[in-house]
Length: 205
Image (cartoon, rainbow, N blue to C red):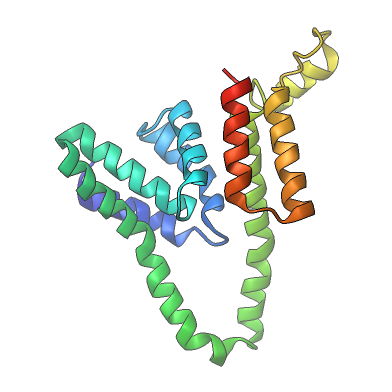
């Protein structure tokens, strides 16, 4: 894919990333994994995990990684660096202009009923996209098979051996413990991720 095409592709993601990078995960799965096949499902799952451990938003980390991977595959390391810069710039371009526009016009229009209506309508849609991202994370890390109507029906109606309910119990326990510690103690995210990585290395092979 040419540099301009990569740039325009990630501009699209930048325009749709209201609510943060997590709302982009569904789009990334659809485009980068299923449509363009830049990444496999396992590569994308590993990318999500690494993105949580490295500084920067998940969308930016994904853009940089995908650009580098595509460029390196076609022209080596320097081509990868150039493509990584291009995809990252594409993702950030809309945000730069939208933030500048918001800074200039927000005070003027913040009490406008139309603007308030737009923001009011965007909030639940953003929540829905984040919930979709949570389900994708669960499919990648917790469930042994994707959560579909057919699979859920099979789990509920078919006799299965204990512990084979389509759930990886150790990752589920790590997820639940991480959520509880974060909610109860407001612990540093770095410590939670490091502890989860250690548990994964010890118990998940």
